[in-house]
Every structure is written in structure tokens, then in C-alpha cells.
Image 1 (cartoon, rainbow, N blue to C red):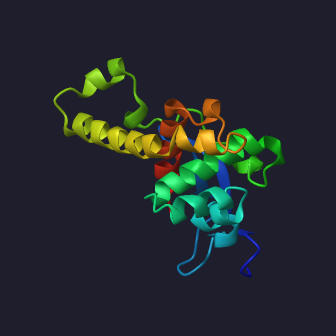
Image 2 (cartoon, rainbow, N blue to C red):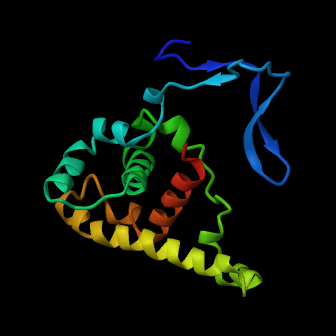
Length: 173
């Protein structure tokens, strides 16, 4: 495969019991073989965010020395492509297929979290969620006021942000 063409060998998308959807091999894979190759240019990344319609906003945030984690840039990119650009987005086939429920304990309801009482996971979850919301709160509602067409409030609310961050965390490579 070249630098721009994906290669898909003996792999398929399947539902895997207890794990959800994923790629599985459909034939034995020889040592050293490449069953799948995906060029970085075909991946959502901070680089693709800087090439997107978010470029002016990201440049402005950078000029103002606004601290943005890689995860926050990807969450902005994901929410913008999914909700603002929608079917016009180059990324639509990917973003529209993302699960609505990632299954992450970070997004669990209080009744579900109660099952983990006494576990270190509850404290970790709380710290992660607090960090995600702090990043969001540093950006919004300022971005919505400055660029309402790019960052409509209804698409960048806290619940959407938490979902986007959980997607980023669950799919990071």
C-alpha cells in the first residue's frame, strides 16, 4: 500500500461477544504480514482538525495561548464534523457510525456507578470527568459567542463533550 491508499487484507468488521464491534482476522496471519494498513492522512487527527473548517478557531485559540489537549482538539473536531458539518463532512461515514454508548464507566449513571462503590475506579472516573469538563468550560461558552455557526451551543453541551472525549479515549491509536 502507498502513503494514501488504505489496504485491507484478511480482516472484517464483526460483533465480538462482550466487546462490541471490532476488526477480526478472517484467515491466519503470517509473521511479518500486514493485515491492515491505514494512512495517517485518512485518520482524524489534530492535523486533520487544523486542515478543517476549525482551522481559524484553532489558530485563534493558539494565538491567545489557550491550552488545548490533543484530546480536546479531537473532541472539537469530532463534534463539529458530526453535528455541524453532518452529511457534508468528509468524515461522515466514520462519525455517523460511532456508537452512541461507548460503554465507558466515565459515562455511567449513578446507579451503575454504585456497583463499583469502594473501587478505585470511581475516584478515577470522577477525576477524568472533572478534567474533561474543565477543558470544555475553558472553551465554552466563549467559542459559541465568538463563532456561533462553527460551535452552536446545542452541539457542544457537556453531555456531548463527555461522549466525544470518551470516543477519543476509546479509539486513540
